[in-house]
Length: 253
Image (tube, rainbow, N blue to C red; front, side, top):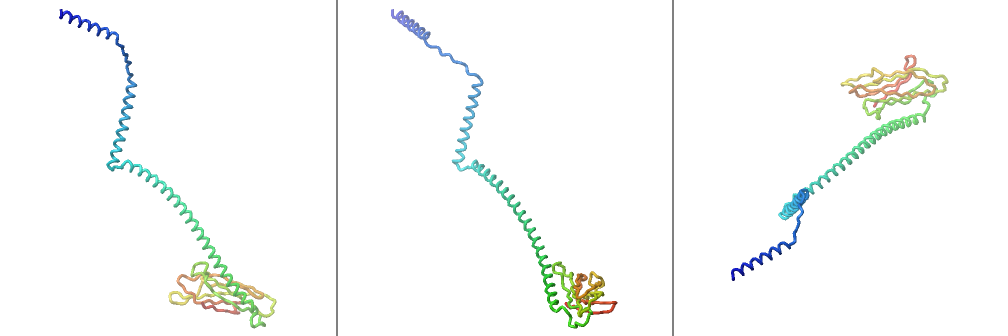
């Protein structure tokens, strides 16, 4: 009957499916460990972060925003500033060293200028003495009394003070006397102070007395200081013996 035949076919088809299902291969899946899953997740997250940052940076550059490039430039500029600071410190140290050397050289120059001033004074003195010694004896060769052949008062330039003065006198004897002359040398300086004339009253201001002894000649020299605000008017050099004036010579500036 058709129904029986249909049912028989259905049964045969079911039997064939059951046999085919029983013969199909079986796939066994191993479970994934939690650590491996965590590593995969972290790696995926980092990869996504890197890709996102790259895409973000590319997008910023594409629209003209170069703030990240400026950060690198700022770092380079900071390094250049540090280098320039170091160079400035080195140059400052070199400048200070050079300034110190210049101060030392200026001090040495002032010392040399002072020495040159002393040498110039000594040269002038020797020239004057040489001129005097060319005419060693006084005109009155028969007299054995001393005479003041030279007398000068001049400022001490090397001292740098306008109130410092030096005096020099040359006392000589003529004739053929063999004995020594013993007496006193006196210096008296005159000033103008506050509109009136005054005389020096202390050795420091120019009133000087000293003993002398000479056979043929004697050079006498010394120094003094004028009072503050005083102007030197002149000076007188005298040779005395037993309170008696033997000879004198005046100096006028």
